[in-house]
Amino acid sequence: MLKPIVGAAALVLGAVAATGQPAAAPPEILFTNVRVFDGKGSALSAPTSVLVRGNRIAAIGAAAASPAATVIDGGNRTLMPGLIDAHWHTILVRPTAEQAIFGDLGFVNLIAGAEATATLMRGFTSVRDMGGPSFGLKQAIDSGIVPGPRVWPSGAMITVTSGHGDFRMPSELPRDPSRPVARMEQIGGSLVADSPDAVRQRVREQLMLGASQIKLTGGGGVSSPHSPIDVSTFTPEELKAAVDAASNWGSYVAVHAYTPVAIRRAVDAGVKVIEHAHLIDEPTARHMAEKGVWLSTQPFLDDEDAIPFPPGSTQAAKQQQILAGTDQLYALAKKYRLKIAFGTDTLFSEKLARRQGAQLAKLTRWFTPTEVLRQATSVNAELLALSGLRSPYQGRLGVVEEGALADLLLVEGDPIANIRLIEDPDRNFRLIMKDGHIFKNNLGGQ
Image (cartoon, rainbow, N blue to C red; front, side, top):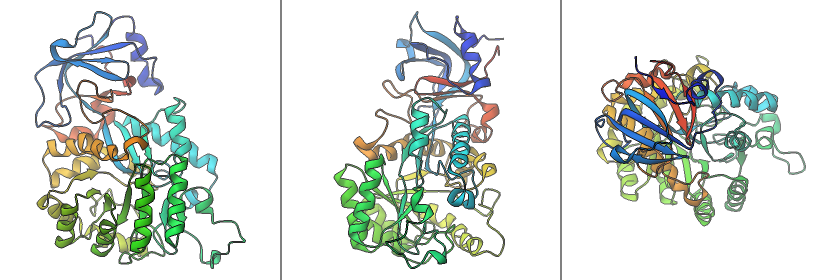
């Protein structure tokens, strides 16, 4: 049997899988005998070597040699970039909706920390958080207190009165400036803004807190109880105020929108990314393509990955509308060559969160395995780069290239030949590295 780890660091690195905490990173780690999926190509490389120095990929191939490096023999396994989820809710994945809005904040943050570690152990080394009070958890992850993915935070999603994200109770209306703001606003889950000036202020507040991009809800949503899917919310002037405020900071606005009216209004205001768009029509898809607007969407289907809303509820009925549009959405996106980012948008279910990789594999209904893997690596990394200097992590992600950040997975087998390998990260992701640190290593003596 091959000894995958050679040298005095073997026992330390081998202990990582049991603790979930990274060992102190050796100055250099050399992966040998690996076949590389670089995040861009359509095939694996021949067996080669990859040298990691600090938190960067220093060399690939013949130049990847160092007598000082800790050697990890990949055993002809696949070395690929860490996965990226472009629509994740770091704080809202595990709690119920009631816990997230009305529950104890300490409890919510603790389970969010546990979920962050689980997310990283599924091979998702970066996430784009699209709404919620994630700044504290991000700080804990970046400080090494809690293992988790890199987080691009949006902060509180910005909505209008009665819009998607307005979770106030009828008893809290009408809004009275003399009373404290609603609970959802107190905790930073969502913020209500009903004029261009109010929108501008809310955007600036989130940027001040550290948002890397801004999330607005431009149309109705499934989970919000008082927000029909067909409704368009922000006015063109309000959307433009958000776009201007974000662009002044070198960042951008992403808008939640399902319908053609909501999508087109956002695009015409200068929004760079549309989230969801499951009810899009052909003229609107063409318009997005002409304007160079990104589509960040999810493979929502009527299957085991659908959020389990109560049967007969308003939310369940709205969900069925969305699910019916998924096939046409991807067909139009492919026809007009939209820049498509992959995300899951998992909410309120630890069980569904565990299927994060399975949802990615589901994209083979519309794309080839290499197209799927590119979406979750190099393409999603391009989307993250839209944050410019507001990005919390400077450096290239989503690729195995010299100079790129060392976020890497060592996969048991060939995920291009068998995309379903990513559905079982516990078994098939043998090593997980983020920022040059090994967070999981179960190669053992095999």
